[in-house]
Length: 611
Image (cartoon, rainbow, N blue to C red; front, side, top):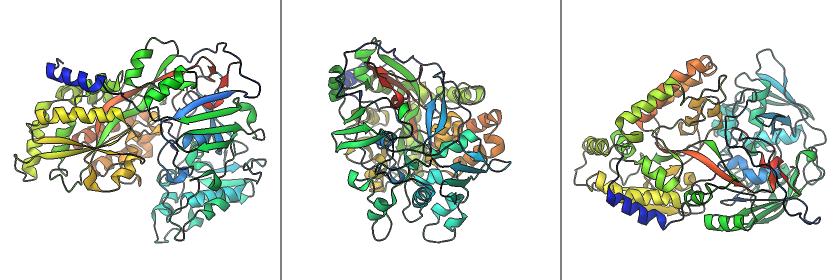
């Protein structure tokens, strides 16, 4: 579409002067069902190992990486941020770990704190026993046994603690969700929850639905289901038992993983050292792992150029520099960057109107944002991501199916990726009329954004320029910045604080069940990042969840189409761009897989340093 010269000038002035930062790939740890391990879709091959200068014997093999923000706690049970996943993956353990298949093109589960894969105890696949590894122990040498896990799961699902990550896990366990959601009613006893101790080294799990051996492992892989150390968990508990300080410092946390925490200099660096007593030590090659906390892209680039990082996720501006670099790889993402819309802002008189939501959807110039801000991403007026359904039996994604294409065609009929200034203005006037607001009233959209996120700040500044033109000066944009907290935490400070909030939540289960990408935006999800819910949308999600639909991909696809159409009609949120991940790997790092594997990634933790 031909751009106005004024827009081009504004963009040039705005974007060239800024350091733009697209979000780094998110390492999600969703406890979701998965089918048998499958080959990944085609992606750029990982770099071959090449010779580099030898490291000193005293230093050993050092892997150097980074986080864009600090892990505020090592208690992943109560933290929705993904930053703790890195230290937890190295310094803690799970019942089952993901591990590459022999051909390096898929992944499998291997026992970690478990002694073997789950054992099916009934004909249908509801009841499974997990034998525990008898040599497993904490870093202080104390044993990890069935009592450890019974305490861990009871605290995780405790209805008074109300841990933020527990709602998702609870749904997989018989009576788990009912127990977790009961609050103080005491209507569901812990003894009724499908987690039992059989003996000191055997657990029995009764799931809410049937499982295969593979999918029975999945809920027990991830930082949120790492064991917790009871003495320190209890020592950190407040008097009302509504929260614990467990994991806020190294003094009140205990690890049990292939590495131990040697140093935690807050907002600076983590250093992990290899644990020689770990039962799977031979799978891990680094002697030391250094994780720097580097919020600013310029600082990351400088360290990369100095050889102090073994990987780098470039932002839009940085990517241009490295497009022809042989060390650059690309791979698809489960993420569609989107904007949550507040429907309860008392300072916005039309915030509750669906017509207002439609106006905002059609006012987003996704092509411009993708090109000038996010750089080498794909504009998207739809939300179901490009990998959704990739692990179905025939590997056909929802977007490739006739049903997904029909929704895309509908969006394109409105304008490029749904962008239509004319429709946006018409819907805004409808919202004014529905809410009895005079058209000479100016609505202020509060765009809440993390002050370190320059890409979304640039989007907000672009909207400041464009919205008054699209909406005949009936709408203006105010940028509200925050720092040191997640977007969800910021929004919880008050409905009057925001109207727009950028987000990028992903759902691993969508690789199998495309509708699952909407999971976090249901009223049933306790940690939902939005406050807008729709009964028709939730009813259709429930249709997709029925076993006869969910487990038959050909039946599921048309139901997902209906769900996505409702999503767009009600504007549950505003999709903006489909994320394509780009990453630079140093020549000294040797990866365990030949291609990016959805659900597993590149397997950095099992990598090696070429001597």
